[in-house]
Amino acid sequence: MSPLDVRQLRAATPGCQSGIVHFNHAGASLPSQATLDAIIDQLQREARDGPMEAGEQGAVLMENARSAAAQLLNAPTRAVAFAGSGSAAWNMAFQALGPWQPGDRILVGRHEWGGNLASMQLAVQAGARVEVIPCDETGAACPLALASMIDAHVKLIDLTWLPANSGLINPAQAIGEVARRHAIPYFIDAGQAVGQVPVDVQALHCDVLKSAGRKHLRGPRGTALLYVRPDFLQRLNPAQRDVFSAPWSPQGFDLRDDARRFETSEVSFALLAGLGNALQEMNRLGIERVWEHVSRTSARIRAALCEIPGICLHDLGAKQSGLIAFNLAGWDAFELKRQLGLKRINIGANGVAYTPLDMQARGLPSIARISVSPLNNDHDIERLMAGLRELRG
Image (cartoon, rainbow, N blue to C red; front, side):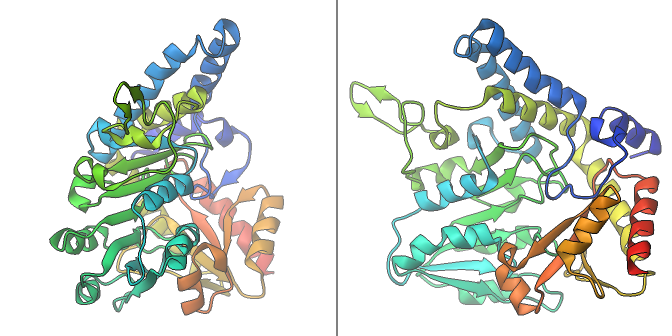
């Protein structure tokens, strides 16, 4: 991306005109004015024509969003569903994989998202075991170690691709090759990947993949994507059903034969209109260009952080994402976040609950986190570094 591209993106984004420097895109990024307009237009349509009557146009916008998501993921359109959050999407797919039996094994990366681990507790209560895939020398989940763990009792392999508490990029494709070779279901939590790095569900060999709309996609809160491989769909029996996901026929109520079996008849067409616009903007911009900019910008930030005494980076892996976890000596991560916020600089902060297995393994009670977007420019970096230097004293 050129400096002109970045200027144009910023000019089209109200949050970039507010004087706030935003480095919390992994928490929630800044929507464009066009995304806001898409949401408002649908709300006004509902107010003017009647909410149910405006649903016809809303359904068209929803399918436009589905097509844009399929393009971004290199997936068939029928393999994409929408949900209210990434956690809800993942939990629905996970619960639909049951029932769980004593002795079933679930293999996860050490960096697994805490919400996914919480969802697994129902399986654990039924007698399943959650086991951690060993890391390689860089701290990433090791495909060779995974292969040595496989037996007939492994019912699921689950990987958080880009963890919330480091710059790690886990080897999702190599993990998928092990899963596919042994015909074991493979779920990917791509909450921090979609919209930041290129995502090709065919190359990843995944059966299920989820991501939130509010993060790097720059969509509205309350939206999420769920990909389900079509040939895997019949393995999933969702408990939540209504007249949309399991429509009536004279023969009874049958689940849909596409990913929409995870949707319901009650959705926010306004939010999905906004998500659709954000997805279309991402496709026009080009995810490869986005990743190149994020990678280059985050490398510059890492180098600048290393020049500030007292900063400790918590990167893992051979190559890093645009998530930069760090601590500043003498500062609690959440208080550091708050103090930077008073300077109108937004960053994130995570505690143990977000990635409990990895945080405990590394003895990290909390981390501060910078996350990068194509919206960030040189001025943002200078403001951030100046703010950190001032707080260091």
